[in-house]
Length: 442
Image (cartoon, rainbow, N blue to C red):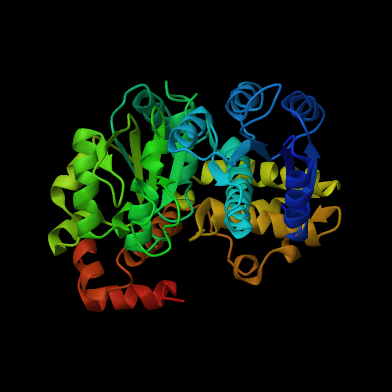
């Protein structure tokens, strides 16, 4: 999705504000339309998909809070920012609980509004990509292990227990978290994702707990945190292993009491959220090393679901190839007449260190740059040059051994001594296997 494809609707009965905001937002590259009443807004939404609605709070026919309710009732995926010249924290909280993503106080620096719009744009763009992958991954699979995992996830969704998702990068942990949310009793409430790795410790805590105006330099207004926004819904903490011990301690208290305090405030806030966490790291080793709290681990891992890498579910690769190809071709308005059996066979034998994400990217490139037919010559050299593995017991054992050794090496950052210990062989034996299978770190 490009900026121009991101449709924004402004709802405000003050024409001068509407013109001003429309011009500012259009200059960023977005597609902007405006109306002067809630009734007109609902009519426009019935005609066209709008990704984001900016609505004023005080309007004659229907106020902003009522419009938010109406939009969320009919167009659940539409994102909303409340704009008001009469900012009160109560209005903001009510708007967020009704489904608004953020709020903007008229008269503040317009850059604040632009930053919120850009953040929502990136989020929607990511959601579109994840939903496309989600539709292909869940809820069916030809792999017995993955099918059982889906059933476990559905059972876990019926509870309110905290869930920890484990798995390599690219296996679809956030997709699984969203699926659990959507099949749970919390589906009508908010799914709030936070990438713990992407934010510095102080920024992360401000995002999670919120802050009061003046709490620190740059805190020009009260800010609602993610825990408060997730009330009744699901909080998803991705890369949970990247949080500091100090943050873990604070999160442990929130999980124990479902209460928290904004930064710079002594007021106790309550939030009835369910936590889903995810990591691609070995938390047990981190506990032994002292970089992860054991009590925090037990609190977040009432239910543990380990998502297998793509190489452990080769039965699904063929279907995923066709589905990704059909999806990309449909988006481009073209037709793929055939994908050669050699292409399917080569991709089925590839290791896919990037998992589902890597497969999707490979297929997208094939569709974009190929003509009607995708052949072996169109594949990346790394995959195209793979030898076809004979279907013999000896060769299958070699393949499984190679994949297992690679998995252990990747999980342990190619530390030879540690990997050899886990594999139950000597360092020299591991070195020989790395040479034999060409498993050196790229």
